[in-house]
Length: 288
Image 1 (tube, rainbow, N blue to C red):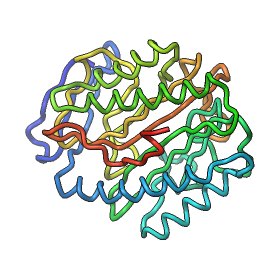
Image 2: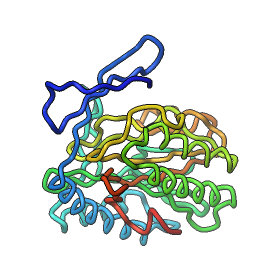
Image 3: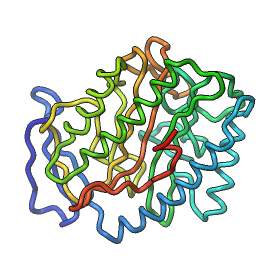
């Protein structure tokens, strides 16, 4: 990730970055910036998502079925006049539409776990990921919680992943780079004996579930695309006890390559001239 330049022919609220993905491979990254009106719309979406996340966390307990959490999320979305951004989402042309509003992942599952009839068990690490579309504006957030008598290792992993998100947010300042965000996450994970999942990423968000740029949880300070006011990013540290990579299962979920536990925290952040603005402020994300 070494070179950026603007293309003046683009509309004012688009920026173009020429991104060296790997040696000899350059591609143009199109990033749509958000106006103050857009960010106000995202604030409203984020407030709805914060409420839903808080409600879901309050009912997570041993013996609860994952599809009960999905039903609760659907009811809350309906009450708010919002839509689930994940429901019907197709990440690639021709791929199967996602069948739920939530992704609920257990233990070694990192992301994209289906909210099926599995029961939450004592000691589980439960990760809930949900997106909200409200009047065309999409916010995205996730949290992990330990249930019952979870191991000290899981508890510490969850705490370190939450802290990594806070450190990532602090790097969201105009003039910083995507590499600063990734480095903050990776350094904190390594300092605490955990690993960053290297083949799953955060992303831009706002008008679509996944927008450019990709936001890696590793990197070099001062490298990568420069952050500018108007960018909106879904930051999502995904850490594991010992795995560096995720493996896709037949059901579409991603699990750690070695079966070790994982944790996942995410929020939507607007980059402004005065610094980062967190658009999904649910206590479930930022406090124990």
